[in-house]
Length: 53
Image (tube, rainbow, N blue to C red; front, side, top):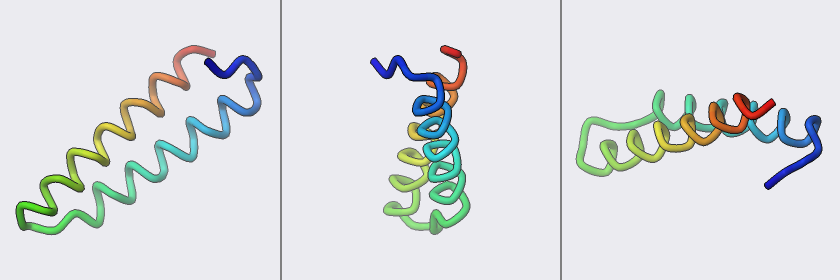
């Protein structure tokens, strides 16, 4: 995967921010549920990258 800690840290922070924005902007429709799920998935990937440090 990504071996440079600085790049991995920046990517993890960006993914966590993107996930939080997606969760915040999810609408109360079925499409909003999809966006909410994708936001949670992006958050999990960001957290997983952060934990590898």
